[in-house]
Image (tube, rainbow, N blue to C red; front, side, top):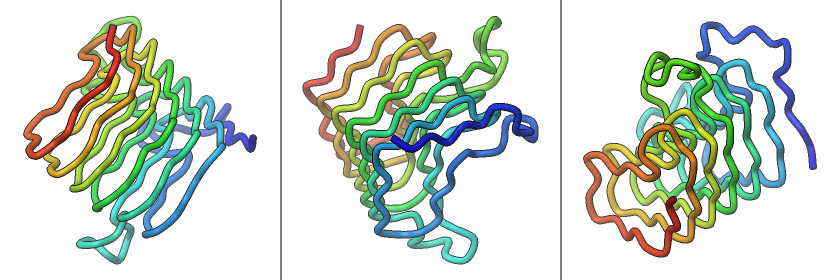
Length: 168
């Protein structure tokens, strides 16, 4: 699998992403993203399309680890899918003083019609899965354990189907 290795890259205070997707209808699969000195992967609205950008993308079989803040994040868009992704050792900014690095999530999303399925999130210094200000989505078949905060946190969420997750 291809690897994106952030070892030695300036983090810009933890704000950089190793991979940013600012478009629609993209598929990224079978990547390993390791040691981003900031954040791992971000799907966002793009620089020119603030209303519909960052939609209908699929992240599949990604492994993201040893991130300073988020492992994978969607902060806009509609209809994105996280499928069989694994995130561990995310939000290292909170270690060794939990909460000191801010509020992060190993896998985090906003937007509408987002699907998080069959993902694994473990040994993170933040929430394992976190959906915020989102509606009409699905969270199922995920495994979450050994996270500093909530295994799954849904905040200001409506019309979600959440089932068959294993959190311990």
